[in-house]
Image (cartoon, helix red, strand yellow):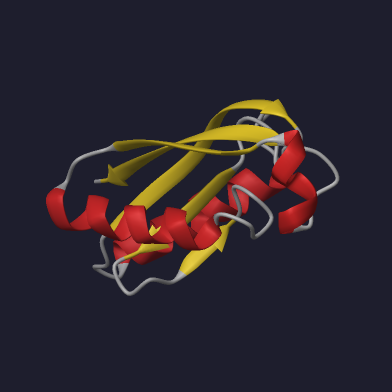
Length: 110
């Protein structure tokens, strides 16, 4: 019996398809959250070397920055630990009900 969620299974299947077609792929994984976070720990997003993406690590609010760092990871081969956050005081300014933080690990897949 698999312990992977349907979302994770789809992200990994897409990453495998891209790899089989000769594309380079980076995988981003939510490794920690504090406070409000749209996606739980373990959520994943795959990014290929054309900028195509599958899955989600934030529900949209930091996806662009993660794709940018994933592309940089594909260029230099170095994994990255990213941290994003917003205070409770600033949360309303960016359309959130409360603040939170999320850490995302981005790594090349070979």
